[in-house]
Image 1: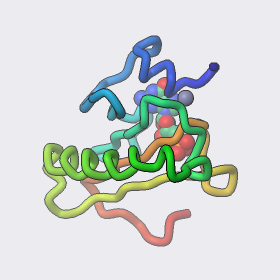
Image 2 (image 1 turned 180 degrees about the horizontal axis):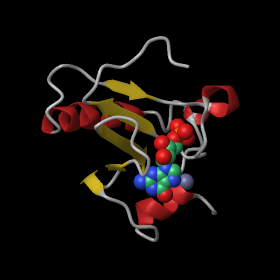
Image 3 (image 1 turned 45 degrees about the horizontal axis):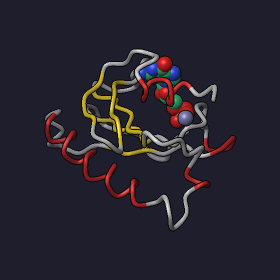
Amino acid sequence: MDCIFCKIASGEIPSTKVYEDEQILAFRDLDPQAPTHVLLIPKKHISSADELNAENAAVVAHIFLVAKELAAREGLTNGYRIVNNCGEDGGQTVKHLHFHLLGGRKMAWPPG
Ligand code: 5GP
Ligand code: ZN
């Protein structure tokens, strides 16, 4: 499958990994939008949040727990943001489920 995040998960495309286990991988975004900008992905391909179901959704809870640990490790004691862009209107550009962990600056709301 021609999916850049599957290739990052398999190691075919290099990335700056910050966490890895058998289910998920976290690595630094190539184009960081904040002092901390980490992407968390399931290793198994899921196209988007819209493809989640009762069988595959447990990995999302795992991703959130790891995101919390990484936020602490990155020193984000003043808060952080976890973002999922889903589909065309959501601004999703890579069609492999991922969560952005952003921190180290004050975030704007509402998002653009
Ligand atoms: P999306 O817009 O789909 O929510 O986010 C995709 C993110 O993946 C973007 O923030 C983009 O900078 C990042 N990205 C795209 N290609 C690569 C890559 O090859 N390596 C890394 N580390 N990040 C990437
Ligand atoms: Zn994929």
